Length: 92
Image (cartoon, rainbow, N blue to C red; front, side):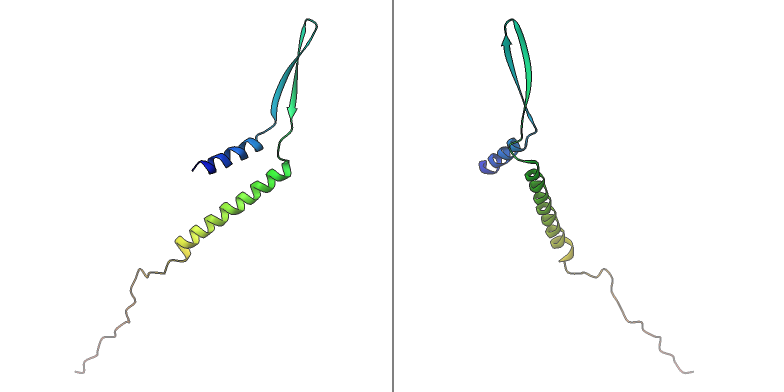
């Protein structure tokens, strides 16, 4: 039960946006604040590829579910067909 949660957290941490780091550099009596942007751990093309593969998997599972629920069910007629009976003509 913990393994899927752990895998999810690892993927989320890898895909998180640019992480902002701040460093204060003291120069004499002035405190200078600089902002550095850390690059992503996973390249953008890999994120796009993972999202595409995920969408293909989700759509495939949805297709299989709907196919099993809707298409593979036997057709049950909701009406009955009876032949039309002509009335017998009696001779006078």
